[in-house]
Image (cartoon, rainbow, N blue to C red; front, side, top):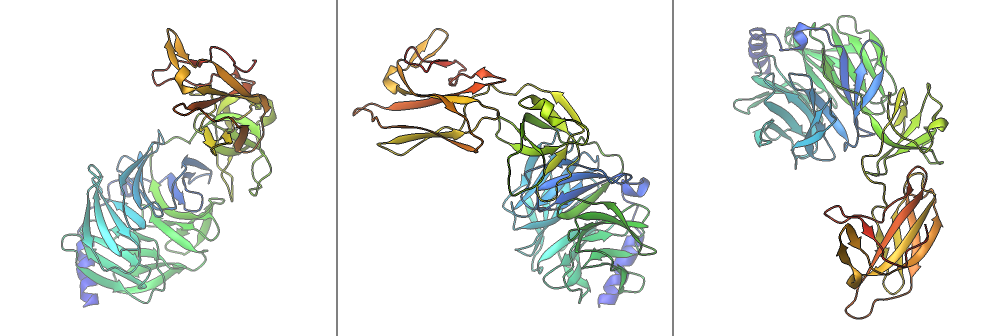
Length: 468
């Protein structure tokens, strides 16, 4: 029965038409997910240089592209989401959520449906890329890890990591046929554009060959391979080696393995593109020297005082000390191993996107209240005040905070991420309430405001303010 089914599939595949993009051109870029550091990387296949195009993902695994090669769809395994990442603007959109550890994704040629395997629930689902609606194609799969459509998009080939099998799922009926078994723990899977079989990883790179209805080894010279993608010629596969942190190419006729790019962290998924529209991710913020940490990478830290995000920097091109406490925008390849570390290749002045203020202010305790806030990069000192809510009033050009009490003047800044501000032993009278505010002092922003109202009016004490 399995052989008969294989013959039907092979005949169907051979009658299909060529794929829309890769069958017509040579891939130039591979988009690779880094599951360990939550990144999506663009790898130049000619030079091996990699640049980040997205950060902040939650164990990203499988990845595929839309037909325009401008949007990457990522199976966010830990986050339980299918994500759409604009490769030019870097905007990340959730297409579908509530998925059960999505492990891989394959987008149809029209760019309208993404087929996703949900590892924990054992489900193959179809996700509408316009509405995000999720429909079930097949259930009862054992730890599905990879999915690849056949050329005619009538079947999905799924590697079942839990069952050690390669299955073919009829997309119209949801029926399942095991094509190959006894595979150990198969992971990535890719269709052969020559329609001779299906490639998959299982500690090596193998192929289920439709011509002989058997599995044959391509190469065992890989280190914990996961994702795999095959170019349009059907002669070269690109494999994400999670064990070595590398992307390698494999000659499918000879089994020869060639290193394409090292230092990719924990690469999991890979998708090929011929002429993608993408831009390296840029980072904005204020340059500081990096403090000692468990991550022994990067000489400097770029911190955004508006968003609180930060990234380590080093540079083979610039003396970053000359940019200390400057507001800049930088870009460059990520050369980090354990942590992201951007090798700055371009650096330009860039004013902050917000008015610099103390943010995320908390008041802890009751009778002896203590102020805390998130540190401001390159701050020299802070001022902290207390006021009575009853004294608030709207003035012609701002918000009058009334009479305030200076709780701390020129409090020295520190490098700790959370700043412990002053204690306040006073308590409001019954029926009264206190408010607390802080401002930051120091180059390059001099003295910041205490804050603004919802209609963007500055909050100003009428008396009792800390000396400037």
